[in-house]
Image (cartoon, rainbow, N blue to C red; front, side, top):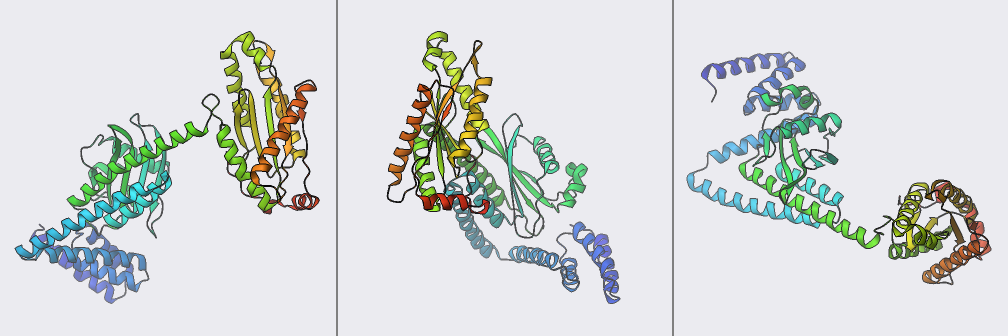
Length: 456
């Protein structure tokens, strides 16, 4: 409660401001009103006058923000004036609304099909419910190592999450970890704990901030932070409870997505080399061939086989053979251009799909790769070599995609065996019969006509 002397000081200040406005000294009047609003955030006359000055001087965003503050303070005061019976009824309504908010937020969290959807949808809903302006997620672990971050801002609010802000948040959160309830600063710019960071807080207009760890089965996976850039809405105990409940469910949803991704990796990836497996390659190749047929661009397939691999296993043991497979997989993954699909077909065979690439280009790429393998891979002083069979798909519309795929794999396989019979350590290509019209269209494709390819 303010003293009489303080009230008198504020009244005197307001009289002086009225005089400044009379003589159209808007800049000084605005400065003094802002100071009163900081020192007395619940003093309505100052906020109402400042809102009008901002409107007159064209500061529409600040004027709108002040209008929200004025409305929130007026509603709170009206609530305090209610009779006991009315307050009880209002409390019941608020509890029901709170339960509905919690249910809606939790439903949105678990509807996300991937991490991006979970974070964006939750942030959007949370900022709406809690009247926030920024939602930040810092992903990490109990050791304090960060593994990425996320930021979502309401319209008109600038992003702030750079290295400086991340370091500040980690320091602030580290001082409070592990909290039983959300860490909360209701006035960041006057909070003595945050005094060393006041300039940063003022730069990004951070007035109120709340954070809580994302904990799954006693393990911290990160932090969720929400900030208010316009201090018009005071978070209630119910809001704090909703925020902590959101963090618990978000941690669970993130872990579920990670587990699902891990299972998908197990289903689609070869455990020894980390490359895609035969099943994934077959499915992906069908998609690439269908795209190629519709867009009339080339697809070339490379089948790679390690020369005399059985001899490596028999002479040096299966661990040595496994090491060769892993190293060849790494070389393929790091030396084949982005957009290509690399997979282990089985045993010592690997396949690479080159979308939108003519066979003549792939011949040069794979021959350089063959040389690199011979110079890089060895087992106890003996060089390891590979043979490669190449084929370009026939994208004839009279064939089904499945037929095109079967023909393509069979032709590349035949060329691989031809390379083996010719002495190994070589590339043996072949171009299937492609209609003349398709070749002309393909050769005319410019860079702007090429499809956007995923980075495998």
